[in-house]
Length: 128
Image 1 (cartoon, rainbow, N blue to C red):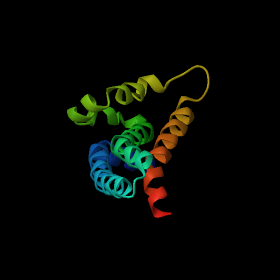
Image 2 (spheres, rainbow, N blue to C red; image 1 turned 60 degrees about the horizontal axis):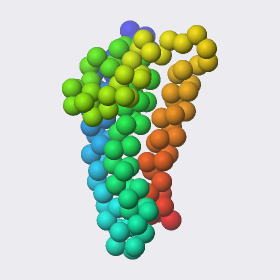
Image 3 (tube, helix red, strand yellow; image 1 turned 180 degrees about the horizontal axis):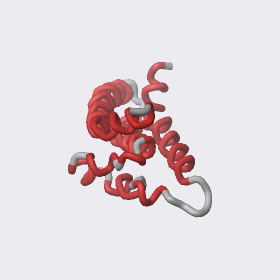
Image 4 (cartoon, one colour; image 1 turned 30 degrees about the horizontal axis):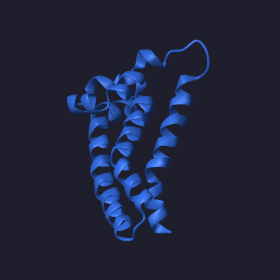
């Protein structure tokens, strides 16, 4: 089995668990940071941290689907992820990553990278 095949097999088997784990970590971190921001009357960062609880797993899901696109990772995702993030699931299905113009994989990586940075801003803001 080649290195690429192991990578795709890992994402196929554990992609859903990765999203769950990131959700739980984000829930704990962003939830804690939101409470601390609200206690310090930093309302913008507090609300941002609450929204980041959903943004962080959405960005992670997008990255998992893009990186595992050759192994149809989207087929092995739990139904709750399909229900919570239907747009992301549909957008990054392997068939939708085929494009005649531009590089959809690079665009998807950039988009999800931006969402990832946006979702981590409240935590970084709290650390400073």
